[in-house]
Length: 459
Image 1 (cartoon, rainbow, N blue to C red):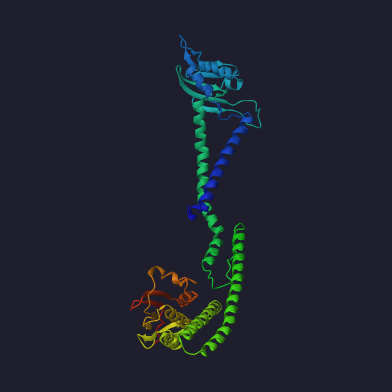
Image 2: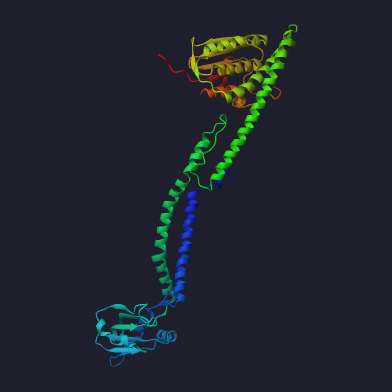
């Protein structure tokens, strides 16, 4: 499974969890309210105040003389068993009445006053009157005996289908709109809250992206961060501090080692110069030069990390002449001819001349070491601020041309080089806003091209 598969969107996850929690709480509150009403004896969804009216409606008819009568239906029998205190009063359009049970005096004579009312609920104030008096329900319905008015205070049990319908209606009317409203508010508010709460984290992430390993002391800002995230940023800052301390110790060790090497290398060169001329002296001088170069490269690492000289206009042609003059004896002693040419007399770039000369020195020394000890090593300065160093050796395989710039990487395991020179060249080129690449040489060898930004034109 890929690493990205473990990532998730905090806004989406938090929004859905909040909506789920809200739905659970809303349903729990409704259940609690219904349970409280049931415990208090108040009518809840299980009771149907129209049940008695419906049963009487379908049981009502007329006898042979046209008078109102009740048919002994199964529903009426069941209702009487459920409600022993059943009472109702029926009144038709002609004023004829039919009653069953003990009709309260309050409702026995009000039928005529409600002839023009289709339905009503009659009762008392909850706290000022006797709470034991149940409210009455009046409804005008069509029956086999014609259109009649039915008044009753009895509530029967709700049928299964009607209870399901009432529950669904309650859920749709009360729960769903409330849940939709809360969900909409959650999905709108949650991203805004998270974005504002984590704005400091975005700032810290931008600071982390700009951290350069060459610049020690970089830390992430812990301002405007949630308390839950602040420990992570603090831990990262502590890790950065430990890395800085470790890098500083490593840097001091490298610098000290390089300085310690310079003295014995100088003594070695002095003694080698006293030897009689011959192939063995030449090889020993080359090995000593490599040691000196390695020490200088280690010091260069320290210079790049500790020193940032201001860039000035550098004449690449003059820098190439200086390097060629310094390395010509070494190249000739190794069996090469050293050639320098340029497209124009002056090609300028903005940079550190000492660093650029060290980069070019490394390229020429690399050609001396790997050029096969034959042919010509050519330094060419192009008009577009490029420097090519070509040899006539065996060249570099294409699949190795990227890796040779990695520190301590060598083409051959037994190669006597340290593998730092080309990495140093790449870092110097990057420091100047340029790059270095490997091409095929004009005569089959390798060609290293360092490309730098041309200096702006000055009128």
